[in-house]
Each structure stands twice: as structure tokens, then as C-alpha cells.
Image 1 (tube, rainbow, N blue to C red):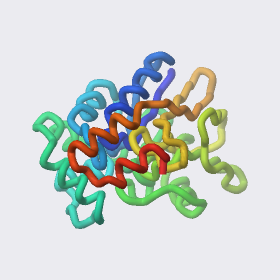
Image 2: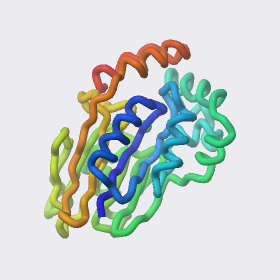
Image 3: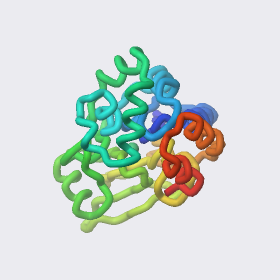
Length: 241
Ligand code: ZN
């Protein structure tokens, strides 16, 4: 079985379309999304519609929950709050209906999925040894998938924790070792590579591959400026920060 994993799309339609085209070219049996479909970006309804149509598992992220009003807007500062407020006014009933039935965790065959971490699936980041240890402790499946940090990551639990950032082309052998994998972000990468990030898991060959796909970020930037979304949110897309 081949499963593509995407996360943190953040209403960046051009990035999502490019990733879906790359995934389709590779051929997959399933597509999973780890949350944050909306927030920051300019095309929330189109992104929700595509994710609804294409994914068999989809989580809710903190941005999705804020936009739905399940978390207070005051939980966000500055630009994130401004973008969330704009997104709230923009979402159509079909998008709201889809987002409102999502949860921040899920379980699949031999994998546990969280938007954030196993300790706090909405807000917590798995970014260091401490947070990774917590998540290993709170889970039992060999494979744990997380999003939220926008940084592609692989952490293996051997005698000590090993691994770290997973740049484009990183391959991980899925043996008996327990692992936390973060595919990185489709719509707002923050690991210095502006290309859209995603992960391919192939259970037949027992391999996970970290992939990056180029997309026309200047089109997303132009759409953000047209909609008066915060300028720095648009600028960061070309640097992947
Ligand atoms: Zn996010």
C-alpha cells in the first residue's frame, strides 16, 4: 500500500494542486492529511473542497478549530489572528460542515496520527527530544505521524533518540524501529526550503520518502495581497521560513 501524507496546507491552493499532481504521478492508494487546511492563505474553500474529495483520513489543526470558533480567536496573536478572522468571513457552508466534523487525532492501520503531539494534539509541537519522548510514551504503534511545526522531521527511537530534520529526498526504512515522522508543510514550509512538502509511505517496500514539490508561490503571494492578508505571511512563502 502506498500512502501519501500531507499537512498544514493553510489555504495555499497552488501548493496543494502541485502536490496532488506529484502524488497522482507517483500513484497512491490513500491520502491522509494531518490538519490545518486553512488559516494564513488566500484560498480556503478550494483547499477544503480538494482535501474533502481526496483524503480518506483528515485531522483538524489549531487553525481549523480557531476558524470554526471551537477555540477562541484570542489564542492567536497578530497576523495569525488577522488571517483567521478573514478566513472566518470567507468560509462557505460546505467548508464549515466538513471542517466541523474533523478531530485532531486518528488511528490508521499501524499508525497513530496527531496534528500536534500525543500530549496535546492541538497545540504541542514535536520538535525536540523531550517532546518526542512524550509522544513515544503516549503511543503504541510503530509509526506516529505529526504535523503542526511545518518542519519535515524523522525521529527514531533506538537506545537513544536519533534523527532530526528530513530534507528533500530523505528516505527512511520502516523496520521494527518506532518512528515519528512529520511530512512538513504543503502551504507554508518553515524549514528553509520553499517547495511544498509531503511524505510518501510505501508499505510494500517498507520505505518512507520525504518529497518536495515546486509550485508558483508568486501566484499565492499575489492572491494574498489582493485579499489584504498580512504582507509578511505572503513574503515568507518565497523563503520557506
Ligand atoms: Zn500549521
